Every structure is written in structure tokens, then in C-alpha cells.
Length: 301
Image 1 (cartoon, rainbow, N blue to C red):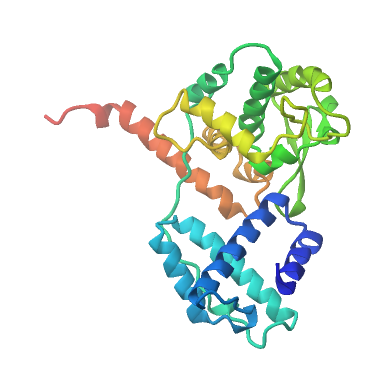
Image 2: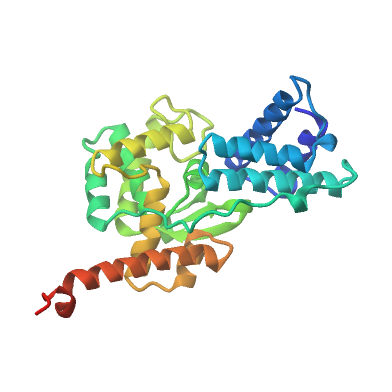
């Protein structure tokens, strides 16, 4: 990693206090950009200060040709804008191209969510009462019952559990702390897991969720187990932990929860981010209306 990139990541880690998950994404984005620019330059490394807007546009065209989603490309653009802005502010480039790098336009995205019955059936897929089953049940219950992000569940430590108040202390994006209440079923599943954890966790491991080896769980392991349970119940859907977070938010709004409360529970910085779930709720209401309203259902005479 070159000096400019090293300084950028120290800034993201120490000043911006980005999570390890976010830092990994930034690192992947910059490594992919550097690899493409090297290929473009006949195998020779290209110094960041010599990178032009034309180079970046060629990289974005390359990403589109690989059929990456527009949201993935947009994330990489955001990384590059942030990186080149940092280089300019710190005098590492004479003139930054950050302002000229444009975010690709992409159609409005409505996140997928599961019905309450589907969530219930997914959790029922966890069978047995051994350590793995008890742990997996607690993970699913917390994803749905607390609306956690994958990175938040992975980073959750024993000292973040406020069991007396039935709450969790969550460190979200940008290291912003929030307190999230834990419902009755999620709390029961969590306590059942915590009773088993001491016999399994290695000494010094503070993360709440551990592997059968006793080491702290990592993202891919959690993604795999969630995918297994979701795909056992729901086909043709994106079987990722985030779908449980989407379901949590959508079900709260469908039950009449205040959108600002939901915003705080999810740890969103802007209300506009939470408002996407109101569109899901409206679509839900339209579907119910069309299926049940007498006048809509009646045949034309």
C-alpha cells in the first residue's frame, strides 16, 4: 500500500472512526481501481497524483461492462471522491478530480422484506437445542427483533449487553452509539445462548457471538448461516441478514410506529434513508386494499 493510501486509511480509522467492515470495502475499492489503472498503463504503477478524470471514467465504464449493480458502482464512486478529496486537502495532488467524479444515476431501490409468517418460519427452521442451534436462533432473533446491521451484530461485545434494561448498546456507522430495546422473544433467545457461551468461548474473546471453535464469529460465517435458514423457507429472494433488518423496519411502520422513532432504532443519520420503508408500507397497504376492498373486487357489470 502506497504512502497516500496508508495516510487515507489512518484518517478513516482514527478520525472518521469507520468500522472494520467499511474500511475493508474502501480498501477493496481502491485496490480494484489501482489494479485497473496499472493494467491501463501497460503494467506500470500509476501515481495517484497523475490519475486523470478520463482514467476514472474508463474505470467506471469497465465496472459497468462487468454488469456490477449500479449501487455497487455508486459505492466505489463515493470511495474515489472521498479519497481524492483527502489527497487535495492534504496537498498530495495539485488539483483534485473529486468534484468532477459523478455518481451514476440509478433507479429507485425498494428493499425486499419478508412477511411476519415468513420470519416466523425461518426462525422455526433452527431445530434442536445444541450450542449451534441456540446460537443461530439468537442471531436470527436479534437481526429481526432489533434491526441490526451485520457489522453491528459481529462487533457486539459482552459489555454492550444491558440485560437488566433489556437493551443493547450498538456502535453503528461512523461509530455513532445508540441504545436498542430487545423484545421478549429475542431476549429469551439471547439469554439461552449466553447460558451456553461460557463453555464454548475462548478466554479473552469479548464478542457476544462465537464459533464452535470458541473464536469470534466473522461476517461470512453469519451470512452463510442466515442464508441457509432463509433459503429453506423463501425462494427467489436475496438471502442476506439485511433482509431481516428491512423486515423489522417495514413491520414497525405497518403497525403504526412513528418514522422518527424507527429512524433512531435503525441508526440512520438522515430521515430520508428511513423513508424508503414508508414506500414499502404504502405498497403493502395498496396490496391489501386491492385484495379486500369490495368495490375493487367486484366484477364490472
